[in-house]
Length: 261
Length: 187
Image (cartoon, rainbow over all chains, first blue to last red; front, side, top):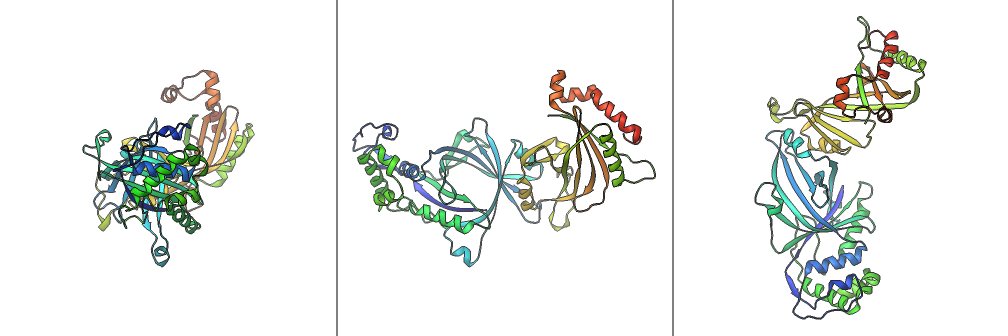
């Protein structure tokens, strides 16, 4: 079982005073260059780093969606095979996403709670499922970054562009499905005993991202947030003025609220 | 990885497999200084595809799809399609995924379980075979495995296929001889 929300963020540039990336690794002074641009995604990354307290992990996942052949099974079934291309030796996983929780209880929760089972597998997994009668329905390449951290629950935030392949399995030639837009997902594993607590933890965390993007249940997109540009500029301006130590030592929940609200 | 021989017990004509035979085999092992180490268990399931509208299974779908859990890898599960020589190694949760897909169903599930012994350089497992939902024994299985460290010390070939073609190590033969004196029906 997992709790999940999604949102989108634009990758278009905004005008901002440049913040040298050296600020984040040394105590060098800020360069001031009014015409330099900064992306919303970079602002989100810096915000997440401050909130999560961990370093990001690069993300490059080849996702293959397989569907059962004609008349196989009581009902048509779907399974996802994921290959982590970021690892030195690609690792494989199978994921099955089940139905979402329904009813009045589910309506009162701001995150989607759904069945989910995954399993690490050996690299011949595609060969097995093809032999069992499953067919490739579509494939995607997700490229971006992820943060894994503990905040009331074990939460994962991924920010990625979703790319399609023009040729079968040609991950090197993938192109964005929606240029200029990246998908943000916040997920947390849960059980039937603790999903309410996990959902609350996810909701609470998402509030800090509200100025940059709106996160909602998958399938109920609310588009980009109109305040994103201003929020990103404000965040980066604050970083410029206060420097590296502020990011590392004081960019906690209260400070985020002070910056962005 | 140890080298193993797995034997299917053939009871004498006119007799049936029963727990007494397993008990006697165990006593025999202990009489030749086998040290009881504990219990072991293997589960094996034969899967068949599920088709809607009572259709006959098309030929292209596998009829030899197996799932097996081994005591050496308690958190792993293996799916096998024998005819296509496919062996998938996965976390145990892959069984849950297969259940949720509802495209294949376990037609027959068997449990192999019994007692494990250490006999010099060898590990010996003796047990019964029974349907997973029944206590009725349908067979007896014995597994003799030479420990990896022993093979390394002897400096023998490491290629499993070559060793199988060369025949069992001498020690395995001695164990089998001792057991066949008591149980002539063995192999």
